[in-house]
Image: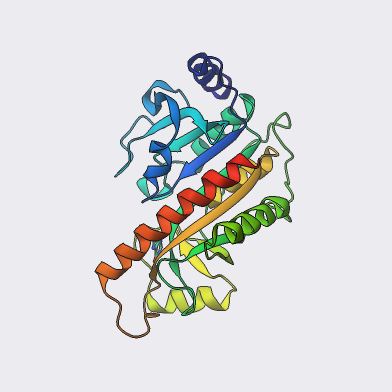
Amino acid sequence: MIEQTAEQIKNKLGKLKPEILIILGSGLGSLGDSIENKIIIPYNELAAFPQIHIQGHKGQLIAGSLNGKDVLCMQGRIHLYEGHDPQIINSVIKAFRLIGIKKLIVTNAAGSLRTDLKPGSIMLIKDHINFSGRNPLIGPNDDKYGPRFPDMSNAYDRNLRELAAQTAKQLDIPLQEGTYLMVSGPNFETAAEIKAFALLGADAVGMSTVPEVICAVHSEIKVLGFSVITNFGTGLRSGVQSHKETLREGEKAAQNLTKLVTSVIGEL
Ligand code: HPA
C-alpha cells in the first residue's frame, strides 16, 4: 500500500522532485493557492488515503513550485475525529518519505491556553504533548522506515525553528514559541480541561498535527510546525472578545504565516 501510493504520486510529478511537504491547517488554504505550475492529485486517486469525505476540505495533493523550491502540499487533513485510523497517517507519511520528502512544514489552528497568547498570534511549535490517546506507530514496525522506539528529543527541529525565528524577525512578523497539546476532539474542551492542560505545560490546544509529526520523526523527516491561534481556550477569555475580531485577527495571522512559510521555504 505504501509503495503503491508512492508510485502513484511519482507518476504524477513529472520532473518535480519535492523534498518539502506542507500540511495546511484550516484557514491557510491561500498558501496552496500561491503554488505555481500546480499539479493536482485528488486523494481518491491514491491508495493509502482515506476514500471518504474529509470535512470542510478539498482532499488533494498540490505539487508545484513555491519561492523557487519544488513542494508537495496536503490540502485537506486526515483528522482522527472523523473516525480515521491513525495508521492511515503513518502509511501516507511513509509514502511521502519514499518519494524523497525530507522536510515537513505543518500548520494548524489552535486554541490558546495563556492569556498573553492572543487570538491572531502565530505560535512556533517547540514541542508537543500527545493527549489524543492514539498513536499512529502502534502495530508491527517496519525497520526499513524507522526504529521501533523513535527518539522525540528534537521532534520540532532546532535548526528549522531558529531559521523560522530569524525569518520572522526580518519580516517583522510577531512569533511566539510554545508547546502544542493534541486532543482527539471533536468537542471543544471544558474549562477544567483547559486549566489542566495549561498546568501540564502546554500553551495551545488543537485536534491535529501530532500524528503527522510522530510519523515524520519516525522516518527521519525534519519538522517545522506553526499554530495560528484562533481563540482562547474555554473559560480563559479575559475581557471582551468579539467573534468578528477573532476572525479578522485569524485572517491577518494566516496571511502573515503564508508570508513567513513562503520565505522560509526559500531558505531551505
Ligand atoms: N480547541 C481545540 N482545537 C481547536 C481550538 C480549541 O480551542 N481552536 C482551534 N482548534
